Length: 187
Image (cartoon, rainbow, N blue to C red; front, side, top):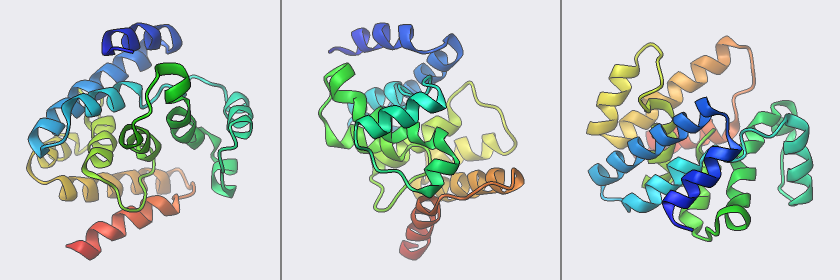
C-alpha cells in the first residue's frame, strides 16, 4: 500500500482531530529522520500509523489484544489505553500490508518507550510529543532540543511524561524508566 492509500484508509478509521495529529507526527518524523540520518519513508509511515489502533474502545483493545495473543502486563490491565501501541504494531500487516520490523517496533514504543530504542523509535516518540498540533509548557524547548540532540531531547521528553503521569497519580510504566535510564547510563 502506498502512503497516499494509507492516508485515505486511515482518514476513515480515525476521528478528524486524531487524523490531523497523525499527519503532524508523520511530517515531524520525516523532518527528524532527515536530521538524524534515518530512512524518511519509514519515519513518515510510522508517524502516520502510530495511532492506527487508538480509536478502539478500551473493551475492543482488550478483546483485540487477547485475540491477537498480545501479552499485556498488570500495568496495561490497569491503564488499558496503553495497549493501542502494541495493537497498532500488530495490525500493520493485516491492515496496511506493512511487514517492516523497524516500523512495527517504532509504533510499539511510541507511547512508553522501551529497552534498546533505535533512532527511529526515538524519532516517533518525540514526533508524537512535538508535532505542530501540540501545546504544553516547555514545548519550545523540547522542539529545539529535538533538532540538536536526540538523546537529550528523549531525556526531557521522558522527564515531562513522567511528571505528567505523577501529577495524575498514575503508574509510571517500567519501560519508560528503563529507556530513560539507558540514555543516562550511556551518557
